[in-house]
Length: 302
Image (cartoon, rainbow, N blue to C red; front, top):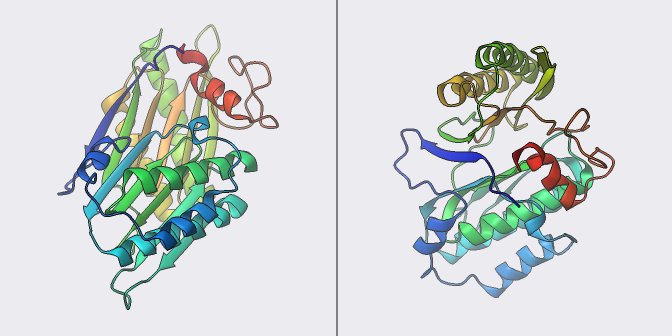
C-alpha cells in the first residue's frame, strides 16, 4: 500500500500537558508504570472479547494522553469505564460512563460515540479498537482521547460531559492540491458552511457539491458528540470549518478534529452510503468489512 498523502499537525491550545500522536510518546513515558491489578485486566478483557475482527482493521487517526497517575484505584476506575462504554456504545452508537474508586477520590468519566452514518458492525469494531488503543497507549494517564474515522472515545478524571471542548485540535492535511484552486476554494467554502449549519440542527451533517467543467464532487461531513447542546455543536463545527482555510486552502482534503466535534472534506466519497466515482466495487453501506473500509478511505490516495 502506498503511503497516505496526509501530513498530521497536532495543535494543543493553551495546554500545559504533553500531547501525543498515536500514543508513541505516552508508551515511552509510562514504560515504568506499575501493572494493573488482575481484576482490572479481567474487566477490560471481558468488555473487549466480543470484537471478532482485529484492531488493525481500523487504524487510529490520533491519540492524546495526559495527566500521569500512579494509583491503582484510578486504573481500576478507567478499566470499569472502558468495560461499560464498549458494549453500550456498540449497541446505541453513544454511551457515557462513570466509575468511582477509593471513596470517590479516583472518579473517571468516559464517553464513546460512533459516527451516525457507519454500519453497526463497524461501530462495534471501532469502539472496541478505540478502547484497546486508549488502554495501551495511555496507561498510567488519566486523560485519554482516541480518534478514529468511525468513532471517538475519551476518559478523564475531570467531568467533561456537556462541556464543548476545542482546546486540542488534530488537523490532517491532504498534500495534493486541487487542479482548479480558485474554483475549488469557492465550492469547498460554500459546502462546509452548509455542513456547519446542518450539524447544529442534526448533530451529523453530510453534504456534497459539484464544481468545474469535469463535475468534480466535494464531500463534506461534520459531527458532534451527543453530550453537548445543539447550539454548542453548531459553534464547535463552525470553529472547525473556520480552521480549514488556515491549514488546507486549495488542498483536496482536510480534517479538523476536536474532542467535541470534527469537520472534514474530501474529493472522494468517505461517508455512508458510499456512492459516486471512486467508491469502488462493493464499497457500499451494506458491505463494510475491514478491507472495504481501508479502500474507501484510501481510494484516491494510492
